[in-house]
Length: 233
Image (tube, rainbow, N blue to C red; front, side, top):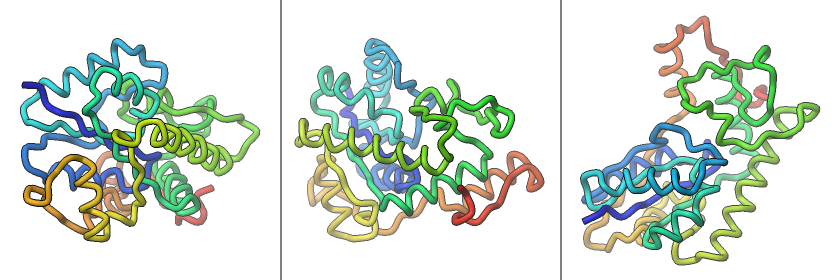
């Protein structure tokens, strides 16, 4: 028997790490946050299906992965696996963009513009590079402008999919993770009954302090930037 898939979506810095932890606490679930490799936006449909088949053949009745890069492949997956559920998290735009910019500044990366690699680094452990899954915007824009446009484009696509496939794609506010009713609504949509769901409110993953701790361990404190979020533009 093949596992059912639950895929989490969100543009980043919107609670996807916390969503992954919540879903993985549910019965008969095996999952992760951002399973490698990165899925390029141009990944051929056959490779998208192979990846899903790999997940469905792993142990557990339900397989979970939460990563922004599934968005361009939702229709391919639903056509082949119509019982898949896509949970989209959305955060307030300005807060989300500020948080993305702060994280990118910590890593010294700019994944939304096709830069020459001199100002920003490309050596993060993503294979293929994270940029392969991101749209790119004009170099004469500011990074902040590009990040805002990425947010707009990402959620425009999400709302279109939610309108077309209301039984399979649903958008929740990030703040729902901090409310019992919100968590219950997420888990109900994911297919868990009241009797089996494990409701846990306020799970927090990938905070700024947690990211700094990981980067310091990996690169040393002298190799990372520590800007305040409001300065990360």
